[in-house]
Length: 281
Image (cartoon, rainbow, N blue to C red; front, side):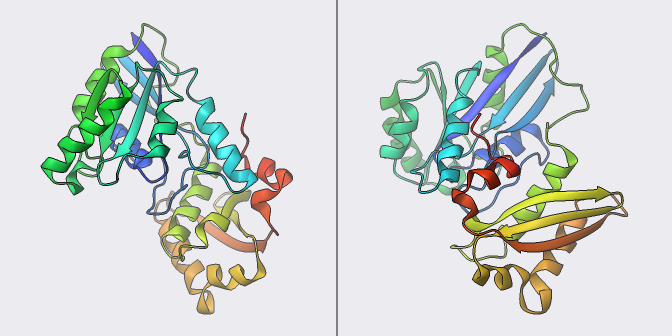
């Protein structure tokens, strides 16, 4: 039996969460067009013949402007030391710059560099990006598309090959370590991100506060009074759309209650961050 842990790291917006979902073959983490969608490390468990690989999707490295941002960077850094393999993801459609260099300096040279989004870049640019990435001196380079799946099987094969002998860490029927409550809260946040403007997503947090099946209550936090009507929508339309979309991803018969509450400046408040589970440890 081979088993181990793989940390997926990189800047924000490079497609780490989409890559994890593609590898697992099911949706185990939320993804959106907005940066810093992933706020806590998410484990996706891949079961294959004679091997179990635990992939850890991490928040994207960035220049933090809030206490939340600092904690996201700390969470990403904390996933590196215990990993058997580190996958460093870069974007094939964006120049490799100082942000990538900063991440690369934090990880071992035995890491695998994954050039993602090759479906959106011409062949010549992919070759140029691989040449630029070679400056990091990592052991392997894999061009992939997490959207189409191109190159992902080859990447997974190499990762499994690198796994040491070890036990099964999770049951065969388990593909994520999210609790039901955490998953529902993340689904609510994901649907809100699809419907809100660029300046709002960072100010939204979600938490399931009560479960009395089939009734589930989820609170949506915003930072300012002016943000509450944006989340609610005219006549409650946004909340209705979010509730409908999330219920479709929940077991039949579930009843989801959504409430919006203003928590002034929560991104800079350690008490609220602790309560929400945004903990750097």
